[in-house]
Image 1 (cartoon, protein in one colour):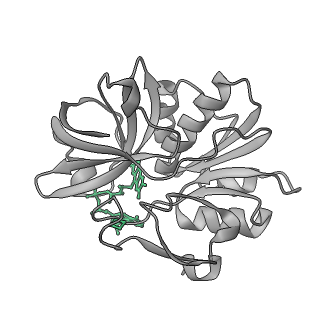
Image 2 (cartoon, protein in one colour; image 1 turned 60 degrees about the vertical axis):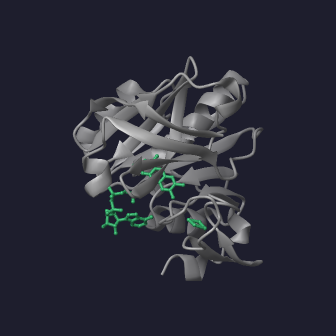
Length: 229
Ligand SMILES: Cc1cc2nc3c(=O)[nH]c(=O)nc-3n(C[C@H](O)[C@H](O)[C@H](O)COP(=O)(O)OP(=O)(O)OC[C@H]3O[C@@H](n4cnc5c(N)ncnc54)[C@H](O)[C@@H]3O)c2cc1C
Ligand code: FES
């Protein structure tokens, strides 16, 4: 488990910034879907790993508020935290939207390493954000830009899926394809390691912590009506 301060290398892409640090020791490497808490003074925020290069950890961060719009040059980092996507999935559809691209890219990278087939669909709100794709080690098979939604790209027949993105995207996916898959949730977090219960969501087995029992959940475990209000 990492708990140390790193100098960050950053590439500003307008609405996104690609950040990396490391290398880190083998035992501190994450699995797809796991996340690290980045500190800025007393505030800490969760970010999922997007890909690895020579044990350096790369993150894709969307500028949405004070932390993400002004990422410090050095941060204390804790992690990896959380439950990852299943290690082996085959013939799966990977569905990502916006900053949800990070954990899905990492999953695509791992599946590629194992020669496991997948189809990756990604949705962006603005065409100018597509520059981000140039920085990825694996590319989506198809990309949508609003007003086309990534859920408009889904084949009619429901497929097994692994997904991460804004709740309206996950809701659209669930209403078209049902619960045969896994989703990674980006709930607001405080502690990040299970202590504060600030990130709970309703599931079929009661409230669960996104940082501890998630962020990856079986889609069938979630109470979709309550989750997407
Ligand atoms: C497990 C996990 C992994 C994540 N991985 C990434 C990642 O790889 N890349 C990335 O860019 N972001 C990721 N996030 C989201 C990121 O941590 C938040 O967007 C963070 O709060 C941004 O901090 P901020 O201070 O910049 O903006 P804030 O002030 O926290 O938020 C700015 C705006 O975004 C809205 N907002 C913030 N968080 C949420 C939320 N969870 N749900 C709905 N609206 C929200 C706020 O209402 C506000 O309008 C992840 C979140 C989780 C839980
Ligand atoms: S953020 Fe504290 S329990 Fe999840």
